[in-house]
Image 1 (cartoon, rainbow, N blue to C red):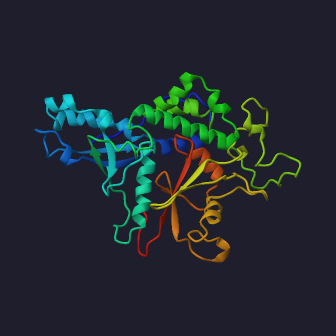
Image 2: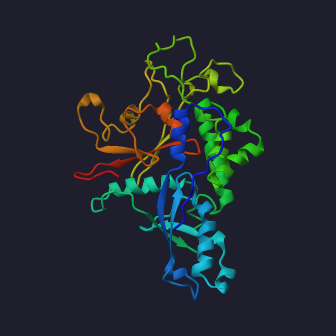
Image 3: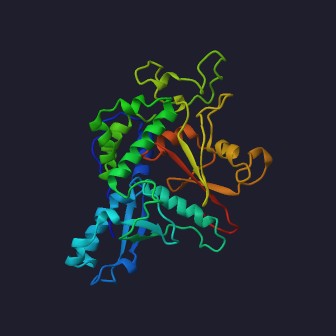
Length: 349
């Protein structure tokens, strides 16, 4: 089984120690995968007793980035020399054990969490736990009409960069921070993902990602004439002098948040870090406003029927979304909230 060891080197950027700690914990998160080659597609003379491969994959990585490692294993152990010459890596694609086509452009951690919450909606499914996500790898005939992007690392990189730019726009109201990066810096973001190098990635990502600063929970709401959360904040322009917290998590227009439901749609809405009356917005407020039947307002006295996973962690409802955006967003800049359903007597993770 393959594992990925964290790489430590002196950091080239200055960020509060607690923020760096949580970012590193998020970065170093891994999930177990069991990858089985479809037995009907194995070439002749393959060793059919070894067609399963186990890997502890980084949450921030993508399926196309682990394909070369899987290929090396198959070439060394499963395929014979003749099969190795005819197998085309670009034809490989993945399904879940249940037969669902997997999205190449989703981080592996999101695929794992989405599978976890989907299982929570099935009455006869086993209780959730830290078990491998079982994938079936096909060697031929990728369903190009269903795949949103080509099953390749380069296409995945383009999708990743697109997600970063969209997150940048949602935060600051423009993409100047992303487009202001040199090409070498933009490529460095992807290289950090490929090499699973925390410092290489954050050396660049720190230029576009807000950091944690003292919150404004006890500050009075701004006067009507001042800049509101729905207009251009001082922090929107990298060259502005909006004060010491212009790059702070509470100074962004909105936090890039997506909510994933079991076997359902993906919800995306504008999520300002601070409410109009002044206090910091919490995860509980976000979920209650958008999914009131699953997450009733605390004022009702009703218990929540669901739970929220972010990076595989059961996040406390009182967590501030500004802090989540600075510390627990994925490498693509998004806070992916996976909503599972409580089952009577079930234990979540």
